[in-house]
Length: 302
Image 1 (cartoon, rainbow, N blue to C red):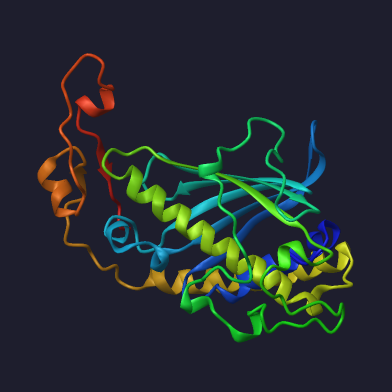
Image 2 (image 1 turned 45 degrees about the vertical axis):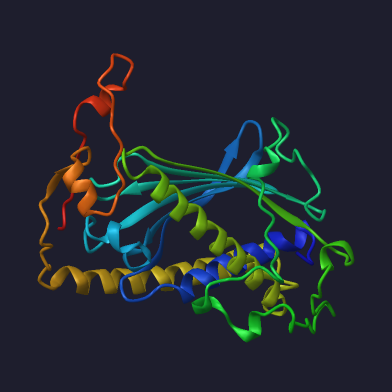
C-alpha cells in the first residue's frame, strides 16, 4: 500500500469501523462485544477486540440449509501493532462444531519482499499469494469507482493514482503480511468449506485495503485518540442497529426447514443429496474412530 506502517495504524482502525458500519443492516453485520486494552508478556501493550459477525446471507446455499436464521461467528483479535492475531470460531449453533480460522498479521515498510516475516519457518512458495490492491479483481458487488485506485488521487497527501508496476516504483510503501490457517474437521465437508473461507478472506482483504487507501483524506492527520473516539461512535451505532434488527427477526414466526434435524454425514445417500462426493472408508484398525462411527450434526433452527 502507498502508506507507512505508522499511517496505516490509524487508517486500519478508521477503515474497519466505517466498513463494518456500511455492511451492517437487515440483521447482519458486526456487533462489537468487547474492545479494551490488554498486555502480552512478549508483545507488550495492545488491544483486544471481540466481535459477533452475523452473516447468514453470505453463506453458500448448502450451509444455509443447516444453520439457524440468526447465525453468527465470534471473532477475537489481539492487536499488538505491528503484529496482530485473529481467531474466528463458529458460535451459537451446533452445526460446524470444529470450525476454526486463525489469521496472523505483520505490517512492514516494504513491498512484500520479506520471505520470512514471522521469523519462523518460511511459508512454501506455492502457498504464498500476492494480493495487488490495484489490479486484482474483486466481486462486482463491492466495486465503487471512488475506490478504484487507478482513478484515486489524495488531496491531503498528493499520492495517486496507482499505475502498473507501482509496487516497485513508489514511496512510501508498506505490506500487510497475513498467515491464514483454516480448519473444518467434519468428514465430507473439509475441502469445500476451507476453499470457501480462503476465497472470502482474500476478497475481504482486497476490499478493505483498497478502502483504507481510497479513504485516506478522511482519516489522514487523525490522532490515535481521535480515531478511537470515531471507532467507539461507529460501534455504538452499529450495535444498536443490529440489536434492533435481530429483535424484529426474533419476533417473527420462524420458517421451519424441510430437512431432518439430525443427519449422519457418513451416510452415503445423505451426502450425495447434499452434492458431496463420497469415498470408501476402509474398516481397518488404523482408521480414526470418528470415521468408523457416524458423526452426527445437530442443526437447530431456533
